[in-house]
Image (cartoon, rainbow, N blue to C red; front, side, top):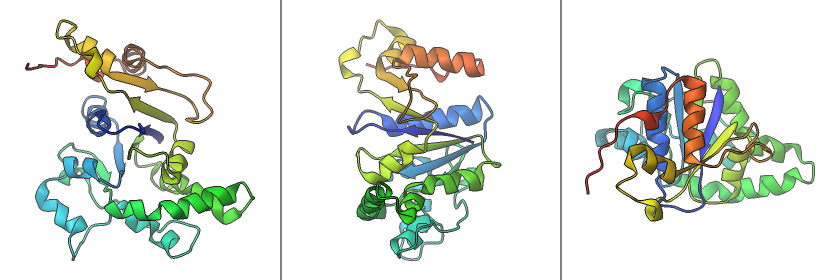
Length: 237
């Protein structure tokens, strides 16, 4: 299972929209097994993927489905390992037909815990390393069940996001496309202008970077025979 993370320190650049729709494309057109993890405390991906009548099952006073915060409860309680849990939203409950680990607003409350763990890593503290590498547990647990794990991060350079980027195979940084808008460019031109994609074998230590939407479009075609930006897009002005 490969991990593809969507991150930009600036909000409002279409990160969540791109993450959800690209995951759907991989599932629908490339027939890949997709698990989506919402790690943005705003939980916009979760709200987009699920119908409103499902929200209370996660966020209501008598919730019956686990969010990502459930996995962190043992760490919040002082342990160094994340909690065992199951995928609470399967594709039959998803508007986009892939499995989901929902986000939760409480994610913002655990930033200090991961910041402390990050600092302890430099001192050689084993517990700090375990906490900072929590994503490897998710990867090992579900690697046989899925081809890709898509992760939507919040607009922050905090320790939680750093632990994800450290353990990602690739990360994608959408860039705001307002300055690029030109209705004469066509759908592919808009996509190339809107998306800046960064690829690397290791997200933080990569020496190989692809930094344009056009390159990312070619990459997807090369790897999988097609690209989501090959689809016709109707833009109403």
